[in-house]
Image (cartoon, rainbow, N blue to C red; front, side):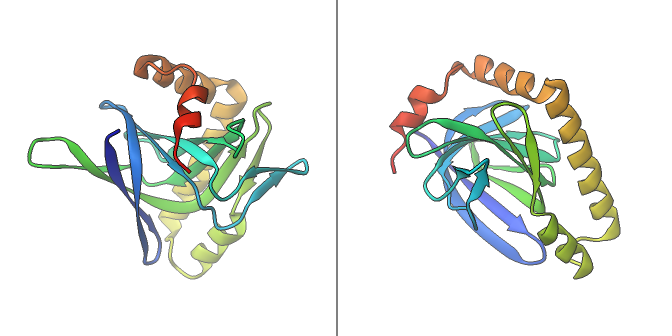
Length: 185
């Protein structure tokens, strides 16, 4: 499987690099996968839905101010979607024009979406702290809040799920379950 480097930035100066498997690529979206290492687990209704070594298939849309991770637990069961509010992706290609790296800048606000469509905003405290410390300026603060509101509207209307299903259909993997089972731990 082909790999690509994700450069993950978080204001003011955090930079991490992650190797991810490249599953699909076109002008509209980059689809990758990796085992995740969240800063803390997410628990919904008494069940851990995101924790160390869970699998995620990431959908990073060109020009969008968010990405979406379809998350699977250690038993390869789908637990929900994790959405990061971020600046639009920057792509880097090698001399042959092949994607070798992409960069995202996290704007702290996140949205967890349960399989039943209910959702919970994540990391509002980190966002407020970043605003107070000047890591995010007033303009970017307003944009992040606007994006979160629009993302919630997409979830509530069913548009986000339709968008993801369309990418999976186009990519030729309508059911990611079999793929996730092959991810190395």
